[in-house]
Image 1 (cartoon, rainbow, N blue to C red):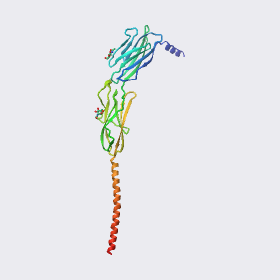
Image 2 (cartoon, protein in one colour; image 1 turned 90 degrees about the horizontal axis):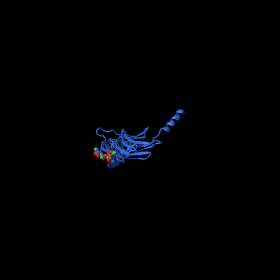
Image 3 (cartoon, helix red, strand yellow; image 1 turned 60 degrees about the horizontal axis):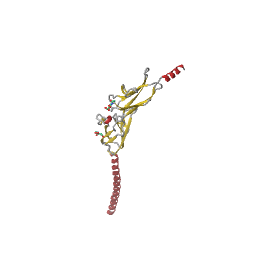
Length: 278
Ligand SMILES: *[C@@H]1O[C@H](CO)[C@@H](O)[C@H](O)[C@H]1NC(C)=O
Ligand SMILES: *[C@@H]1O[C@H](CO)[C@@H](O)[C@H](O)[C@H]1NC(C)=O
């Protein structure tokens, strides 16, 4: 009980605190990201608010100095602006065009003689999500058993670039040696498309439909998956030959009937001639 009241007392006397730190989990490299730090000063006087990216200072607010706000560009990051109110500071940064994860820290310190510091950190990952599903090129509507084709699946632009997985009837197709995922040229913001070719060999006995699925995966946490399906009909030759042999069967039966008639006629003719010879 005594311990509890001591803790409560500490919480009350611990002067200022950061009440909310807003750092987006993901930042698009094509747009600036806005980060904000909200704080409560209680009865303390604000000395400064600083923002750090990893260990580097990118922003400083010092109300007693002129100008009160100073921005610092650090490698890979452009600090576009910053603004402070009595209880908050926000900073606008242009994320670097590479898939990186960085720690953003807000640090709020009080005036002397105490110079107390409150600090909070959150991480931001640079990611550009794909807007569109991947595209499959080269899929015909119909294939014959034993045929071989090459399909090409291309993902939408993203950062990091997507991984490509192929499935045939829900079975993952392991890439052959030469079938690596290839990357397109780089776009503003570091975005790229990726593509991978799949060789489809239709088994000689196959028939029905082939369900080919291409999956573009962005390996972020949690992964982002987009996919496209192509259905290819396999026209089986065995079905065709069955049809042909059935036809032949019918002909055979017809031939059989005519043979019976012919035999009957021959028999009758023999009987007649035997009769006439009598
Ligand atoms: C940061 O870099 C950008 C682009 O090079 C520039 O426009 C801006 O003035 C720089 N800011 C600071 C504080 O140096
Ligand atoms: C696959 O498609 C992409 C873009 O759609 C193209 O750049 C690439 O050359 C194609 N690859 C093959 C082997 O056809």
